[in-house]
Length: 600
Ligand code: GLN
Figure (cartoon, rainbow, N blue to C red):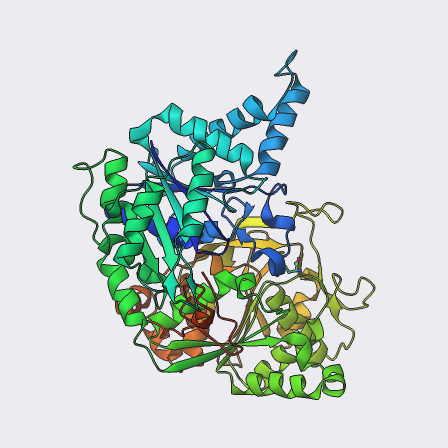
């Protein structure tokens, strides 16, 4: 097993995750099998209990692991399926060591950070690196390890120490360290500055780690004299200094790496020259380039508890992007804070109310994503009602599906106090209830989590057709509440169809409104399995296709359409953000209504 460690310097938010995933992409394109590990030095055992508004979305894996969103990047870029153990946290390591201590495994010894925690980290890495993640037998060839945070953080010290020992143990030919750093431009002199990188490399060395490659993030390509300076002061050869400047969409990043022969530098460090092929990135190239050319807009209203951080819904955005690309449309996201649609806002803040309604009315499709807690629920119900009554394509994901059911129960069945018991435990019409596969008292890892099977109830329902007429599908879940099975008959009589259920028939997985062109709710999260060339099981394609009038064409070609459409990968014309302050940013390639599109 060969290891590539990716560390970050100077500041966070440089796009280390995208860089590390892109390194994986070029190595994979060289014919190597690649796996990855993300280290998050925080104390939480996993990302499950962290607020998406603080830390970005919680990504969910097949095995139910609630992990950092960077694992989503790896799954999407490398088309692999990771396990919960591929995300290491300080919490997990300490828990494992303390469990061992309680069992008596260290009997007689003083348990310390060095060597017990550092040994546990190394053992974890070696064990997890061997787990196959690409559907093939046996371990991968290369494991890309991304160390979260920035060099110098107190939290990451045990990991740095462990990785220093690890690099020595596995040997120079099996370990390559890539340090992602920042080369800022000061607006006064307009000159690329190397000092922050010099300091951060010095910090890295003082901790016992020597970088093989420097990946320098900057707004523009690195100037030759700047490279020369970095060579001299950081002791890294010129061909090992990669200029990762701003590009119009993140699919260009593997191409940037390839163009600068980063693969050769990595293969050389890992003693793999001659073993691996020249990377072929034909699909990436056409996707990235065509992605810059799309112009015909498709406007999707995202109605959520939106507070300005687009990372909170990252996988949904990516899934929408993959789907829009497949439909050759340029994606515009209209962020609508759901509470702005509520009557109370009309009185308190008429401007926001008007703006929110204008965005909703101008949208080609409405998406209500997952969520927790009752803030903004009323606004989401209003959005669902608007989409249902005005025949606007609607997709409700998880909470979004529950919202659609609550709205229907209130408006069509006339049960005005219908609600989820999550929001009103005493409602006399609980149309969404707590379904025990989890716990109400323990919040960590107790939800209905991970891959579960959904069986289509009717062969020719819209969702079955979109999924290529399969009889069942496996999608990822993350919820505690579900549609009340006791109310299903009543709802179906009124026209709401539950077209997908679990094997027991008790858990409602998909809801559809046949009298509507596209009104679909799903209890699962289709966004987690969407890939750049393979949009999420046609579901989000369903929404996008319906929103831009292509649904009939998609349905006619159902089953073959996914590949047919994705081969012609054109994509979203990107919007340039944030360059005014000379901070490097990689755009996701989506245009946002509020300008909060900065994403690395
Ligand atoms: N809060 C809802 C539940 O727990 C929905 C969760 C979600 O959208 N992920 O069931």
